[in-house]
Amino acid sequence: MSDLLETIFPHLAATGYSITSPPSSSYNCIAWSVHDDTTWWWPDPFGLYYWPESISRLETLAAFIAAYSTRGYAPRADGDFEVGFEKVAIYVDAHGIPTHAACQVSSGHWTSKLGRQEDIEHHTLTGLTGTAYGRVAQFLKRPL
Image (cartoon, rainbow, N blue to C red; front, side, top):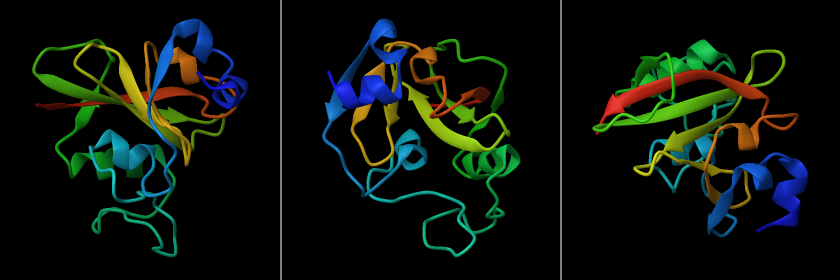
């Protein structure tokens, strides 16, 4: 367990998690949630990072939903586990700006890449809620 992670995410220890990979700056949470561990995804206006070509480079929930739609995801009302589907949860800050994404794994738990830090498997989405990432604002799903 990581003291740094538990300081940044004070609910993480209480809700349960495990570190699944070492820190890396090669990819971020958005990439990780679509199974890409080689690219940093972000809609920066200068085009420094990968973002689907047809999607506006805006830090809005609508732009993130559109980016995920290029990978077959559609909005969903909840993050309940469904056999045959994978789900993503998009977090937003107090201003509604996307900050993070987590992907559900076959156990029903979630996996996240924490910025340039480690990948983790966390038992609940509330483990990452708070000042750093805000709250979950949107669920998406696609068939496996």
